[in-house]
Image (cartoon, rainbow, N blue to C red):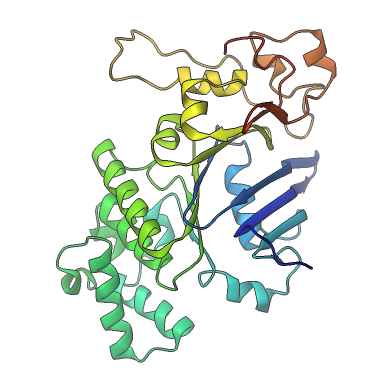
Length: 327
């Protein structure tokens, strides 16, 4: 296979879960690329397939019942179907994941220091003294004060912001090339959210890491990411430069997400919610999966699945009426 010109290439990735009621198509044929030093935000409501796709990349879904198809190439090497011993070498060392709830991700019965040091000793073959010195350096790098003392802390003794900084330290401990950040700020207050995002931006710049940021907040994505891919019902429905999508979405779902976020510069008595609920992925609606909730739907939307295609330079959308309506 010729060498890939992209750091990460996701091509027609599909993840399906078998249940007693039928197959759930959690991820339904998504494709994107990621470059070094780039931030790609994967945006969508809960249940859209954002987290499932990230776990599929790392091979940390239960198989069975999960079935994974398509390809995920890291510098040309396809990760889908690799033996467990081979994918184990990729996890952490080349692709790392930052989980949504740091207190759940950290082991509650071990101190912060023992967890970081164990990772370094197991994966980098450091001595106990070397691992401790490196752990202190990692905590310092992510902006944690008094790192020597903090190593003695247990997860329940940490605030949400400090716990997430510890998780960031662990996620970069093995110098990965790709970081998958799954809603890394959703459990934090606004001030701490900004601090964690600034930390991630600084680390990306220092280490030239490619970052996939999974979020439901379009404002965060627009302010932090280079590009955005919007997911709905397991599919990508809009992609493009982050600021362009934020200023002018061309898919009704993206527009609805934007209107559902409060604006500090506007006085709003009530936010505009998206009507209805996400579709049942065992029995999805015919045609466009968003049409039952879309105020612009026409008969064609109910019977014909829209293709993800380019409508403006660098802008793709899976909508029959893109550019025809103002979502």
